[in-house]
Image (cartoon, rainbow, N blue to C red):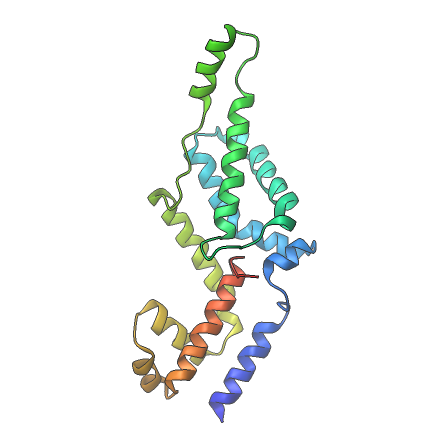
Amino acid sequence: MSDSRDRRNDRQTASLGTSRTLLARARARDGDAWRQLIDLYAPLVLHWCRRARVPSEEMPDLFQEVFAAAARGLPSFRKTKARDTFRGWLRTIARNKISDHFRRRVPRGVGGSEALLRISQLAEPPALEVDSAADRPIEIELLQRALARTRPHFQAQTWQAFWRTVVDGQSAVDVAVELSLSPGAVRVAKSRVLHRLRSELADLPE
């Protein structure tokens, strides 16, 4: 009985304010959802700017450009493939805006077309490779913030089932014995928390 009640409480708590995904709420111009997106991803965007050697005094304007472009493009963003993520989409926007930023710094009318081409090539920022090891610490920090946002929405037993199967790598059967749950209940708990976590990261399929 308590297992059933906990699952019901988890569903009710997790649904508060999240009848739509974070992305859907941001598309609908929900200010809280948009602030959450910026709060989560601002460190990653600034990290990409630093990797591209954008001068610190120019970062605030570029930061605004990236998120302004994201706001304009958000209505058309769709996850058509399993690998599609908001993070990857935002990376593409950041890469384009950083490139535009560097191109604007190239002087015009100096040295002819060949000289301008050489200057333009030198002005290009380093590529922002997908899954670059340089991004890992910032992405881990992002995940930690999303986990902190997710944790209060679940009962302790549900969270433990998720944590021990996903983070600690234990089997659902072993966790079920430890937490006095059925293996099916453990798998459901894991699925619910992962679903909420993806929503917090704006990476929930729609």
